[in-house]
Image (cartoon, rainbow, N blue to C red; front, side):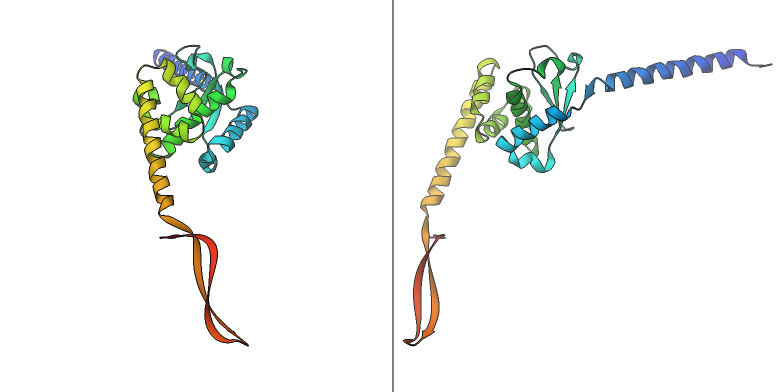
Length: 203
């Protein structure tokens, strides 16, 4: 006969409570899952716009709607964990590839070390990434609805123009024909001949 029935009852209740908590946590964890088809689509977008990410691609998951603040959100990027999350209702969207490109832009910004948490992660740094990736239309779309993003886009475009001017100036400082001198010995005697070959050398 058990001499401590009350103690055992308390232990049993605690055990059941811990199982309930464990079950709840497992259920919450199961609300996101990976899908091979979605992963392949993401890789296709990365090959087209973000080849720098191919060596360390983020993970993409499908998640239940509770993971998102509202039903207008097509996807989100989890900074630090390098995870892109797409809601179940967004998997069949016509603009799914655009959603993935948007979130890959956040991953690329993080890869570059851009700590761009302003404007919900859509500050000047993210705008620059999108423009350079050929996704300026997505940057324009965000600038159209997010307060303050239009100014960030203008700054990003200005920085891009400045960078292009510096690059053009650098190209102008180079002559793209290189002269090479070779020592030649033949029936005509020994001599040094100069040849011009394609190639950029400083002027």
